[in-house]
Length: 134
Image: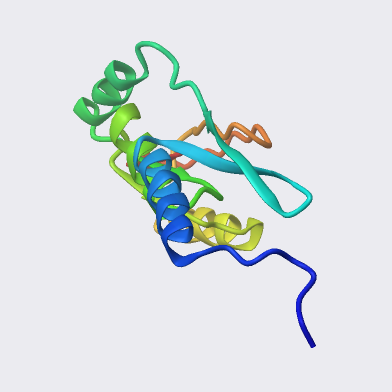
């Protein structure tokens, strides 16, 4: 049985993957746009890191607080955003269950401080803050 989808040659696949990887390494999310089985292009979506956030995280670090970014993004995108924002560590491709597990692990170590979570917004407190989850 023959597929009704047009075949994509190996060179085109390599080019598409290279573009998608470059976007992810730059902290973006690649979004392929196609019509009738034909690739029209790749859109580069990117979250904006707030100005001054790197300096704020540096101040937390000076206070002995470690920052952790938890995201559903792929590892390349997460690494780029973490580096741009200046967080100490990150967890990529995190499911809601993964996020909760990491938060609970940090709470169990009694090292979780107030944190900022972009979606949903959550504040968690601990008696001895040494980590902040983002």
